Amino acid sequence: MLKNEHRKKALEIRIDEEMEGWTVERVLRQKLGVSRGLLRRAKGAGSLLLNGQPVKTNQRVAVGEMLEVCPGEEKHSIIPQRMPLDIRYEDDGLLIVNKPAGILVHPLTNEPTGTWPMGGALFPGAGGEYSF
Image 1 (cartoon, rainbow, N blue to C red):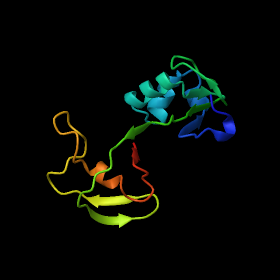
Image 2 (image 1 turned 180 degrees about the vertical axis):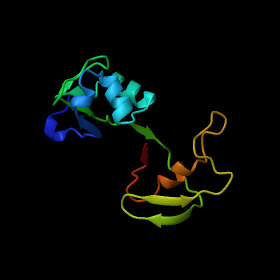
Image 3 (image 1 turned 135 degrees about the vertical axis):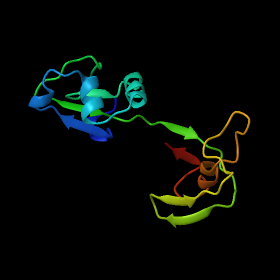
Image 4 (image 1 turned 135 degrees about the horizontal axis):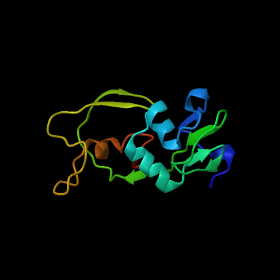
C-alpha cells in the first residue's frame, strides 16, 4: 500500500445524507459514473478505500466518510514504430492526431503492429510506453 502523501487519487467523494446506507458499489456507479470494468479492476487491485482503508464493494457507507478510487500503475507496453502521422496539435500533455482510414487504433491478433499509438509512442514524453 502506498503512503497517503504519495498516493494518486483519481476519484473521491464525501458521503452525504442522500448516500447514507448505500453500498460502496452504488456510490461509485451512481454518483461517480464508474464503469463495471473500472470497478472490477479497482477491486482486484485493492484500490478502493473508505477513510483511507481498503474496502469491499458491498460495504455500507455513512455520512461524512470519504470514498476513494486510487488508480494503479496500469501501463501497456507499446513498441514504438515510425509511421506518418498527421499531427494537428501537440504540447507536453496532449497529442491530437488526424487518423486516416486504414490505420488501426488497437492491435488485432492477426495485425499486432501498425497502430497509431505505436507511432505516437515516439513523440517526446511518451518514453516508448503509452498509458491508457
